[in-house]
Amino acid sequence: MSPEQTLRTLRARRPLVHSITNLVVANLTANALLAIGASPAMVEGIDEAAELAAIADALVVNLGTMTRDRAEAMVLATASARAHRRPWVLDPVAVGVLDHRSRVAVALLEARPDVIRGNASEIIALARRAQIHQTDAVGGRGVDSGDTTEAALPAAMALARATGAVVAVSGAIDRITDGVRLATIANGHEMMPLVTGLGCTASALIGACLAAAPPFEAALHGALFTALAGEIAAEGATGPATLQLRLIDTLHTLCAADLVRARLTDTHATAQDQH
Image (cartoon, rainbow, N blue to C red):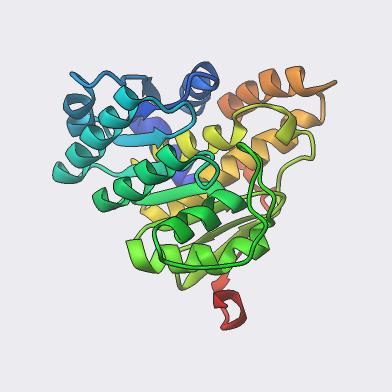
């Protein structure tokens, strides 16, 4: 399935994306979903999360601002999504840095996410905390990654094989793997890390794409739409603030003519990638 097909199908279906996200990025996440053609629902109350997850087209769970109530809502929503066969995305923000959220993230793996998306340090830490893969990689500081996507690839592949999820590792070069297949995205712009929440935006767009494409293509195309929109938006941006505004506009107007700029590779992983 091509990125153009995914985008066209997404916009035709206007999927309802249930997003349990963090306070810092809720507005950006909702606007990005609206711009790409989806319908966001930012519902995180413990009395409603499971009910909405059962009927939404996709669920996105983001651990950014963790509380006990939000953690409970995440557990309820993900269990409901799995029971009702609704696809969902796990974004393990700052896992490995703080113990409570790390334990929550590992517990959420039991609901078998379709896609796990994080930066390199988050993916390495999640694989380590779940006792799936051990490494001597540096690790992150807060929500920032101290590792490269290349360093995270063995952990990402092990995590994918152990959980059945597609794992997307974001960075200067994005890497997406299901444990066998490996794709890379070389689009994006160096100013993007200066805008809070663009990784969270990628997770949300992957969620929207899950309503239009299989998990591997959804992860690849959602990450691509984010990176490509950032690259295009940066061409007329004067700084991070205008980049954010222009990125939303670019998602709204993204079309086949823009997608030809995609710098993708899609291969099978080598033995070196897995170790």
